[in-house]
Length: 239
Image (tube, rainbow, N blue to C red; front, top):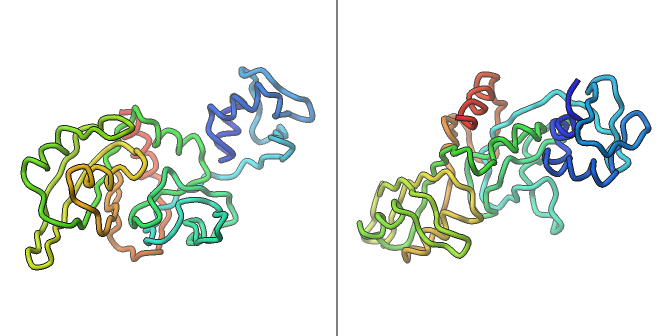
């Protein structure tokens, strides 16, 4: 037996916190009876749980790593009919991206139907490192890179210290390639950090998420995570 909000989250419907809200608002029923108490325990396999009038099916959890191409929305649907990340993974299960990459950013994105796992990885207190490769205009000065390493003041708060390396500078084209590692997930964070030191991003790609990488994949390709990788991500999040 498991708590009702956990069962709803694991079905990929919503986060556990939002599930709790749905329960207290009277939008969840178990075996035909409305349930509003958060402590309620259910058998995920035997009991029929209905959320907003729709029965949830307890699916086997799945975990995918996608090399997201640029020009794709990190969403399940898009009101403007643009291509979405879920269209690259043929599965009958109701998967969704863990976090997001901007429309014009490529790279490593995780998708799952396990809401609890997704919330664990996205929780701000768990500091999973994410490494990006950025092509920028100009050549940042050492003092500018030091600012990134100390943390930059953005309109939604100061960023945590970043790790930054200059990989290459092309003086003829007046561009540089930077490697930047952060563990936060503010909206368009890397782009805004680099703009704050006066260097517009031309191209951006997420190469690593924790210990995961893109090696062996081309843009638009995916693979399933191995069980030990899922376990390692859980361990990484809680430590």
